[in-house]
Image 1 (cartoon, rainbow, N blue to C red):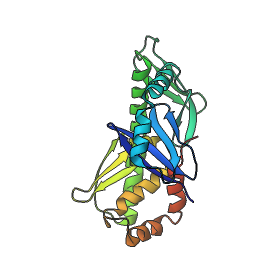
Image 2: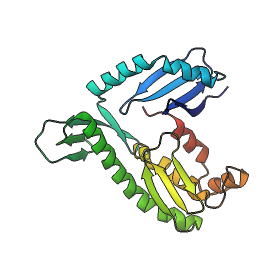
Image 3: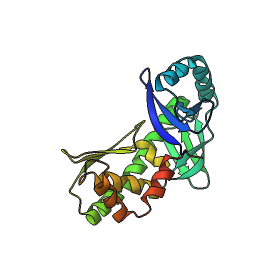
Image 4: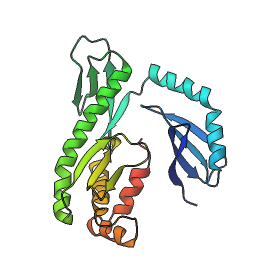
Length: 225
């Protein structure tokens, strides 16, 4: 049987859920932001899983504290993992420096949390540049109407489309993914301007422009690394 991915809200926190043909339950604190990912058997009860996660609260806090103390040494950007160094003690203006060989250097920040916030903002700016080039090209090709769009950090979706206002929202964490996967999300959301639901007509439209959309969607659902 195939694995399934989804999300579960536990006490106001969104937990990434992966249902697999396994027997045991596994919980992970995922760097760099410390969100939770749980792998469970295919038919595990959601309420039981929520209670189990609540019972792991001390374990979660311990691992999140360790993550803050020993942050990850790499970060993903447009599908590639780069080394990252955050230097809170350098007396400089806050800045993100990036080179394809050197990776990321975040300097001029007071602490690690501030460094990660600055890095995410920088990634959002680069994603915005990518979308500003990609969206008009696909709008013209799909003959889609003008849209308003924005970037937000999302926990459960890669993008959304509000047809009434023609507003598209893109997940900030798309900045970690390759341009081919970003392109899939763009075409997906533009197709929603014509078809509200994920019916046959919707997927036929996506397939018309991206014949390999299923492979791209599967890649987008896989974890990084």
